[in-house]
Length: 205
Length: 205
DNA sequence: CCAAGTCTGTCCGTTCTATTGACACAACTT
DNA sequence: AAGTTGTGTCAATAGAACGGACAGACTTGG
Image (cartoon, rainbow over the protein chains, first blue to last red):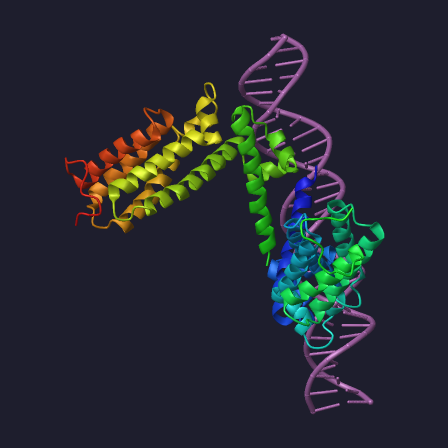
């Protein structure tokens, strides 16, 4: 019966995260003030704390929401190449790196001097993020290319996620070049071949 | 400070009107039950009554919202012909009649047998609607074609609104044909000429 | 190294709002 | 005429948000 109330809660959550996004993108997580956040949305500080138990929880939710949004785009990139594993991986990785390079939140996380309190989500405390990305990608790959050996598949997905994350934090080349290299690596892991590029349009059985 | 609260109120209003729209479009205003309306949105009946003082008020707001939405489209139709009064009127009227023919709410209002409680808004109790439409259109026309004589302008706007409303309730021909006839009439009233169609692209000074 | 200031996270009393259940009243049905 | 259904209102209760205050951690500057 209280369905509307529920809607209001999620709306409040979204508004708070929107405001947090704007502030973090501009000044970094460290300079984010809970009081300002509440004020932005037009709500008391207590109400904010009843939605997010701590400032850390805000950062967590903020990062998670952004990650989930990215995953949507990644899936679309994968979908564009249903018959070519290498091209799919390359497209997904390229998309991710490009997005990460543009995303104000991620840029703020990386450029903020020293310990921003949010950067660990991308590096040391990124277990949850890794798990989410890995399981999402893994499930998708398992469904789209069931013919790939499960063990090799898991290894490949894990490598893809970790290598991509690494390039997000520490860019080595252009997104396209990095994507090409990562896709090469992933395909080798997945297919166990040393050739690098299997004939396009085929999926090994 | 209570900015979020305000947003929630308007959201509630919109949700209630959305639900009302759906129910009225399907079963008519008479068969609309306040209890169902509250239930649809997930709110108590009292909360509904604290937002709309009566069922009549729901109908009023529902009709008004629909009218205002129409006016947006009408303005766009007018905007498409800034240099040709006749074409502008014809486009706006044609748009209105076509929209009215498709709009589930208006269709329900017209087709519901006998007294639906909502039909009067289109006919006898439509003073507010007429005023809104007339003032909106009048202000727009006054700004876009300031050269037209004010007295003739008011007469023309009034005629346009009333004729269009009449055709909404009692369609005589296709929207396009009706629009053409109404545009003819309006231009005659506005320009005081018996020629019907002044050369396009000109505005008399 | 201490004092002042800032910010987080928590508690509590007040105020505002929604919910619930009941009711009188009107209209319609059987 | 009695029963049903729905509107509109009221009062009591429950629940949220607010404002203000506080301790504790941390930073800054003298």
